[in-house]
Amino acid sequence: MIKVTAGIYLNNDDLTFVFVRSTGPGGQNVNKVSTAVQLRFEVLNSTCLPAKVKSRLIKLAGRKVSQEGVLIIEARRYRTQEKNKEDAIARLVTLIQKVALPPRKRYHTKPTRSAREKRLQTKKLHGTVKRNRQTRTHDLE
Image (cartoon, rainbow, N blue to C red; front, side, top):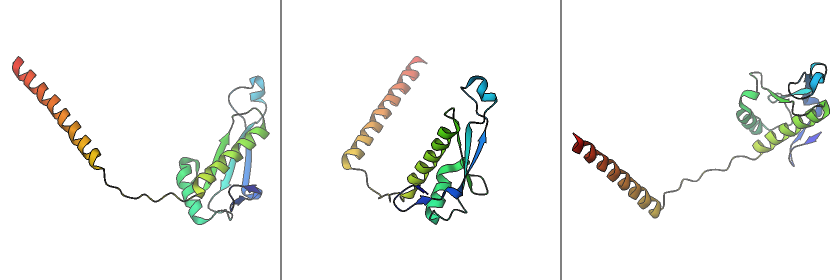
């Protein structure tokens, strides 16, 4: 079990790891050893995530989620399988932690009096600059 938050734990059986050949540093070793990791997590079939967390996770992950609802995280930062595996798990945990808390509700506010006055002043200044440009171009003709 992997602890994500106080109430959310991931089951190790829900995570699937596929090791593939990595690009980047490693010399000739790159061509021989499969060190990059693809972590696959079935979001839609997961029993450890609440429905709202699942929907927010799919929305946040974007293109990383397939049409079948499988979240794919690729980790190839390190030269060893173990470190890449840990990196992929850590990235999955941070993704889930981001969506575990519901988004804060936005309260509609009105602009302050000074903000309205400042906006009108900048509009007036911009208008005078444009007016001055017009008079110069007409004088040249």
